[in-house]
Image (cartoon, rainbow, N blue to C red; front, side):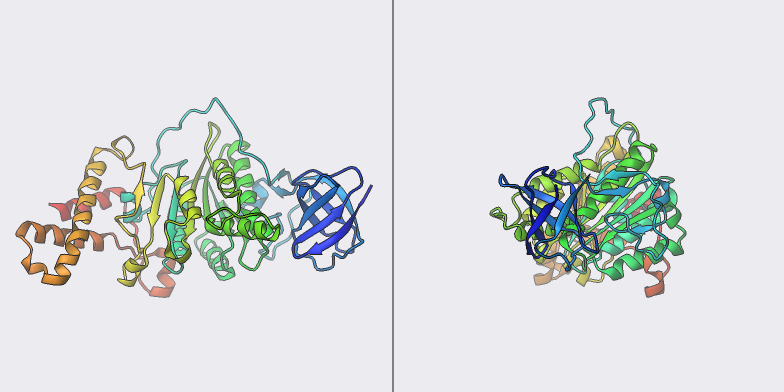
Length: 433
């Protein structure tokens, strides 16, 4: 028996079912001309179903019939999506033909796979060609890197450079998930990938800032579903780039407000922890393949202690912090070397040479930070010879970690850099002598 639309409030459609209630996270269909789809969010004991208007369809009105589809939201998976730019439900955004109806599909909303037979894979470091990343936050296959920063400090540009450098070398599949970012940025990335012949190994899913919070929150899970398929069914190693994970939290927060849910004391939805944890746990590796993820994380009001930022950060193996103060000095990428950290910077992973160099460099940078204020007051010449030498070494190190981006060559006119790990370590050793 069909349900009847009882109330339309923004993106929430209230439907009354007398019997045959749908399930949570199931799609139901309004029997209007557009056949509008609703995603069941919750059900109360009186047969009232709260559905989310996934397409923001304004033609839904009270009294319309609603039928069950008996299926969850699904996305196309398989090699046909490689080279395409798609929306949260697999709709083409690149102006090309829709995907075949015969293509295999998988459900978007699900829990992470559980396995008790997983064995840690052999440690494999992926070279990025960017000194500051290869030295401070080694890019290890199957692990997670977070790029944290406020607005306009270069998160997206750094992500594009990583895609350009790493996807060229690695023979696996690259995936890009755009969550709530500007349309211009998605188009620029698509153009960059096309120019560098990287689309043939890349799939893109976008739900940008103009989309409603339902689609913006779903696109992260859509991308995770496709990444899991390539990992589990085709045994591929996946490079997964997400821009921006905070926008995923923000979309979930907007939905929570629309649904009149009580926020936690930090102002976020009460399901903040589980929302982040479920998505992050899906972006993992197993004995069939790996998912190596790079995730940008916007810092609201430049507050790195924000609860959502802290929760996402805790899921990362390495954290690159981009600073507005560093950016104002003209240093690119604008990495705060003192806040950037990695649990992978160990002798077992990077080798004893790299590890000992990192300890010495971090010690010098901390000393530079304490000497900087003294120098600003009394001048560098008043420092002891040892302190003056360390101060100069630290300055040289900071300049050594600057990088001209390949993806910005057209705008800046400067040829992009690429440094091997050996070149990076050697350049640092020359400064420390």
